[in-house]
Image (tube, rainbow, N blue to C red):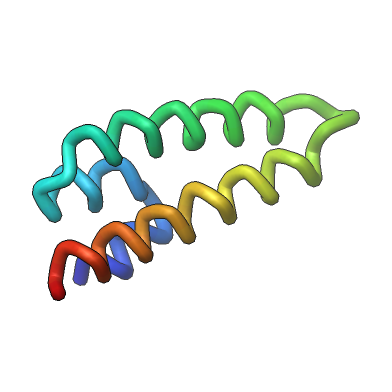
Length: 66
């Protein structure tokens, strides 16, 4: 369930997994990706940063479960 939540709101998924410092870092990436996505010129960079935030959340959640 946390992996599914990481797709839409990765900082919340990290908070629910018990990783508040990682959630703060991921929130910064998440907000940056939204800001980049909103610009016309750096539209693709927003998707790239969102992908990095998603991968960071998945790896952190996987690490916390082991």
